[in-house]
Length: 412
Image (cartoon, rainbow, N blue to C red; front, side, top):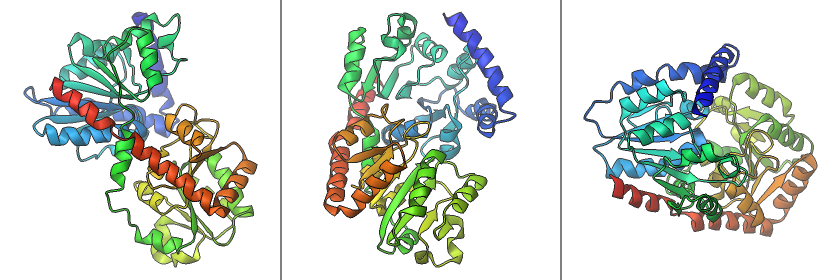
C-alpha cells in the first residue's frame, strides 16, 4: 500500500506544480515549500525542538494556547510551526512565539526523512486530523513522541471501515490522542486504541483569552454610531450574494453592516462594493470620510475580525454555504447570536451544538436569511438569550489546554 501511496503522491505533486502556473494560491503552495529547508537551516544539532503542525488557519487557532504555554514552560526550546495550506501560512508566517514558521514539506519519503533529520523534534504535536503516512511512520521510526490535539473522528472516516486496516496503521504512530468528544473516544476504543483523553477543543481556551485583550477599535465605534450592527466574518461569494440581497432590499436605515471577507483580493473587494446599493465604504478609505454616515463597511485587510466581533449585535459567519464553516467561537465568546450557512457546517461540532442549543441559526437560502435576521433584530429577548447561550457554551467547554500541557510535562 505504501508503494501505491508514494506513487500517487509524486503524481499528485507534479500536477500541483503544473496548476501553480495558473492558480495563485497553488503557486504559493509550491513556491513556499521551496523555502522550507533554508528556513530550517538555522536549527543547530544541540537545539531542543518542539514541533507543532497545523493544516491551516483554523487548526493554528487550536494550536495557539498550546504554543503559548510551551513558550513559557520551555523557554530554552525552539518552537517550530508548520502549515500545509497557504491560507494559514501567509497570515501567520510572522507569528512571534515561534522560532521558525514554514510549510510542511509534501509527504514523500525523501522530503519527510530530510525534514525529521533536520528538525529532530523532542515532541511532535499534530492538530485535529493531519494523517500523512510517510511523516507518521518516520516519526515512529525515530521514536519521536507524537500526540494529536483537538482530534475529532467520525464514523465515515476510513479508519473505521472494514477495509481500513492500512489507514489504522497511521494511528499506531501516535502516543496519545486528545479528542474533542466522547464519540471520537468511542470510535477509537472500538478499534482498540485506548490511549485517548476527551479534553475538548483548545479553541475554547483561545477564544476565552480574547476577552482579556483590549478589543476597542475607535473607527468601529464611530461607524456603528450606537446602531444595530451585523458583522459578517470570513464570508465567501455564496454568503455575500445573500447578504447583499438582504442589504439592498430589506435592511432598514437603522441597521449597519460590516463585512470582513475571506478573500480580500482587490478585484473581489471592488466587485462586492459595487454590488451594494446602500452607502458603503472600505476600511482603506476611512481616513477620508465621515464614517458614521455610511451603512456598510468592508474590511479590506486582515487581522481585525476578532476585535470587530465585539461590536456585533449579530454575527454571520461565512463558509457554511461554500467550502466549510469558519470559526464561530470567536463571535460566540462575546455573547452574540450567530447565523451561518447550513450546507457545510455538520463537520463542526461547535456549530452542531450551538444550533441544537438555539444559540445559532443556519440558513440555506435568502428567504431563510431574511426571516431569521428579522426575527433576531426585532426580538431583543430572543437575541439576548441566544447570546447568553453562546457565551455559556464557550465558558463551559474551556479547559483542554491544561490537560494537554500536564501530559506534555510527563514527556519532556
